[in-house]
Image 1 (tube, rainbow, N blue to C red):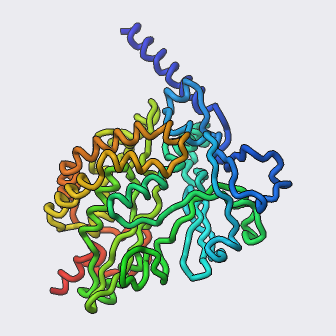
Image 2 (image 1 turned 90 degrees about the horizontal axis):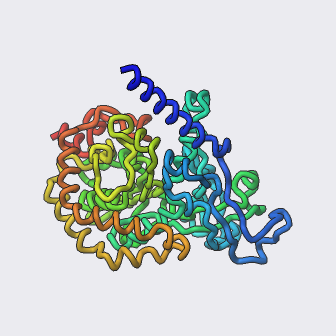
Image 3 (image 1 turned 90 degrees about the vertical axis):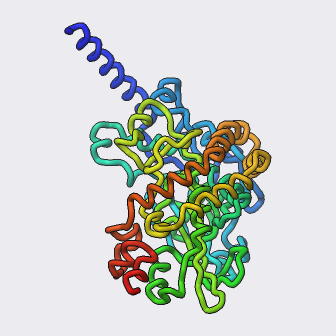
Length: 428
């Protein structure tokens, strides 16, 4: 018995040493883009160039021990240089004005307004995890576990997700990769936001219609949609089929982070009735590839059920069902899920999935195309099964008892708090 205990103790010590080795690779918590083809950035006149060779980050470079303990993830994609177009806000889309700075937990962002009043967002590709690091992790010197977890996000995942969304026939924010050098138009944000890599995409709200849809009055975020529901009642409904299709698409691409603040709604007016069509934003966690010993422990469904790695098969569907789903899709017939799953299976052919990778630089496709496409095909194969399971869990969990994220300040009736259509049922 003593020998067994001694052996276990040795294994624990080895495990702790491996963790300490792994997390000691760097003490940095944040790093901006690495420019490859210019040395002294302060002397470069970027207006004389149309593109730049840039790597998103070298912060996630590793050795064999780190790969084993914290996973290979998408480290190579983060450190591989790619050529990106340079943009200046005074000429971009007729001229952009900064509206305000965003407030995401990881993403540094600026809201912009174009010359024709369309709202855009500049969202940093490199992430700043400082707000996510718990005090105990800093005390124990383990903050690198949180920092390094960002390497599970694909730096160009949003670009691929957008191209696949076109194939799937679902609404999205059309992100594009750009490099923003320091410039006068950035003003007070020049130091923080200049010389960095961004996704430029449409905002999920605004008075101007940038979608391909007709008769759109405005695009609103989820809390504003709830207020519109209070105003218009039975004359306003969401497009449930479109939302089911989008949520099944999320499952196909492994995007597990889909809370209420990551959606917009295109308000379409026809025959004196309003229909809200969902628009998906923020694809930071599409194709989320988290591996390694530490990560597999932390993402166990009994420890962190809501962080679900992108694998060939879904091992824990409840972790993909958000309060958002229960709020908007409660009592939606299972047949809707099955039909949308079948249509997605038909639309997302092997050939179209493979062709979607053209939005990535060749060097990035060579790294990650094969693994991602294989996982997507596997999930597509089982999509009807997943659709039924998704529906059943929503029905089983039932109505909400707390406000959606971002809607805490709204004054909602009990019915409107529980689900989007429940207020109508209470009045009938």
